[in-house]
Image (cartoon, rainbow, N blue to C red; front, side, top):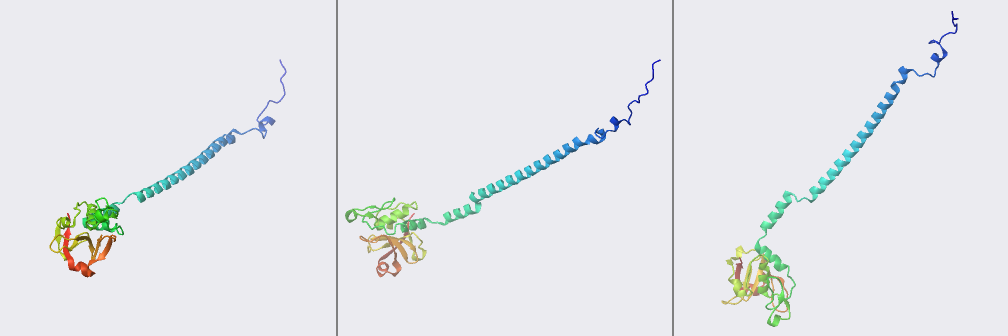
Length: 225
């Protein structure tokens, strides 16, 4: 019979089994899972922070764009106010404003057209400007009303207005006795008028109520249109 070996077989108490370098499966397994979880948490935190920053930036940009749009968009209130102002401006006020814009322009006999000052005729041939009826026809053309270039014709192009009912832009007539008036001006209000007086003068405003000459030869007021 073969001889039975007395050498001790390896057991759990052998040096290899008790070596401190051998990993324990029960403690080594959780380590990869823990690292993965930590990495996932870190990625989640970074993603959340990025999303929060992006959302804040987008919100700020949208707010700025909205504010800019609101600042440039005409509000209903402003549009209503502009329309209200436009409605309140009468044709007479438009005519008066157009005449006042010509202050200082030279008097020119026969001068003036719906487009503005022109060379006159006769003694006004060398001067660009307005005569009295040229100024009034120009001013009222700005308000959409066409007048003849003659004081007598303008005296009949509209309705007569009493002293108490006069408004800005009404035509004031002077001189001529019982014939056609010889001078015309635009009423401004109070005792003022704007007109082109005579050769050598310029378009100016005059307090006609305080003038003994104009008071004496006043013929009445007419509202064109």
